[in-house]
Image (cartoon, rainbow, N blue to C red; front, side, top):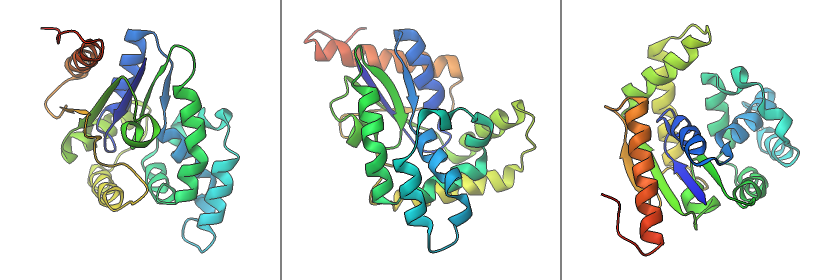
Length: 217
């Protein structure tokens, strides 16, 4: 079983994907970490003419060992770096096989990111697109950072999220928008447990319909 979870930055897609993976006993890949790792590896070139070749080389040499430093990978500024390298078509192509191989392992997997349901796993058994308003997303990300002892400038963080949304919407190689068959789940007014229950219900409905049965009540 493959579950694809998409959505904009800080929408809660990673938390929900992780919860779904635990619920169904599936491995989970936060594909955004791949782009964040490439962004970190390309940080020195981000404002110069060598960004594209540097990012492409970093993407082609990426390995799982580069996905372990979550403090660095999940920092707000790393998200900005990720959105800058994610517009490079060759970077996305280099990371495509990594994601596909993870999804197609025996038993399936849960993947979350930006173009999972549209490009990485268009044949996923269940697709969710998680959304929430910018203020709610800012507050969630701020709390995550503060829980790790990181001081947060909420004003700056809000504008980083808004700027990243604008950049992602214009990205011709990305997937900021939901797949036609994805279920939209707005978590703006939901806590984590309520959102996870709603996500599980979406998956159960998708599985029942795929099996030719009726949607669970």
